[in-house]
Length: 119
Image (cartoon, rainbow, N blue to C red; front, side, top):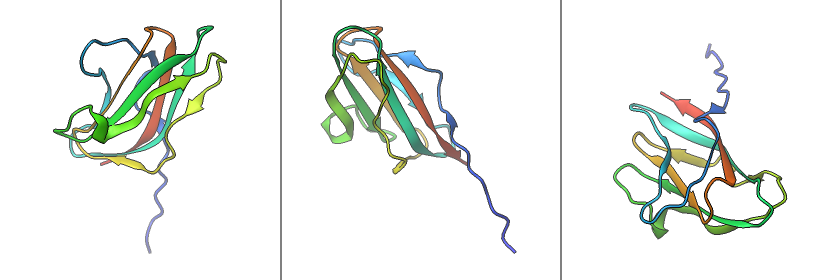
C-alpha cells in the first residue's frame, strides 16, 4: 500500500521589499541543490500612496533575467495595500533556478514567496 504524502507550502524566503536596479535583477530566491520547487504563491503589496511598477522573472538555471523568463513586466502595483497574487501553483523551478525582481521605486513593494521544495 502506498503511503500518502502531504506537501505543505512554506515561505521560500523572508518577506522583503523590492529594490531599484540599474542593470540586472536581484535574486529573491534560488532553488537548492537536488530540489525542484513548486511556486505556490508570489504576492506583492504596495505600502506607498502611489502606484509602483514591478518586474518579476522566473529564471531557469543558467538562464538570464530577460524577456524570455518574465512572470510580470512593469506590472503596475496599485497603492491600495492589498496583496496581489502573481503565481497560481503551476510553476515548477529546477535546481539552481532563481526568482528575481525589482521595482521602479525602492522600499515600497513587499514580496512574499511560498512554495513546496521537492527533494
